[in-house]
Image (cartoon, rainbow, N blue to C red):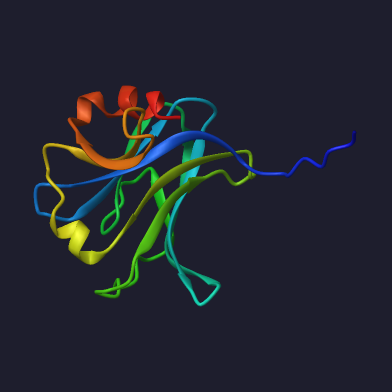
Length: 152
C-alpha cells in the first residue's frame, strides 16, 4: 500500500515567555535538536497569517537564548518591530530557521497572559502525561531547557 507523507518542519525546540526586570516580555528559546535562527510573533486573522514581529539571529541558537521582544540584544536583528498587540486577540510565538529545517513551538497568548508573566519563571506549553493533554506551566529559567526538551 502506498502512503503519502506530508512535508513539515521538524520540531527541535520550544519557545517560552518570561519578563525582564522592567516587566517587558522576553522569549526564551530552548533548542533540543538542530538550531533556531529566527523568532516570529503572528496572528491568524480570518485565515490570513499576519506578522506582528520578527527577529533573526546572526549565530544560530543551539542550546538556550533570550530575546527581549521590545529591545532585542545585539545578537538579534529586528526584521519587523513588534506591533502593538490587540488586547483581546490570541497571538502565537514561533521559532524557525531561515533554511526551513527546524522549528520551535511556542504558546498562544494574549496581552492579559503577558500581564501574568513572572520574572522568576518561564511560561510554556508542556505535555502532561497524566492528563493526556498539553498544559501551560511555569518552570524556573534554569530548568527550562530540560523541561522543554522532555516535552518534545
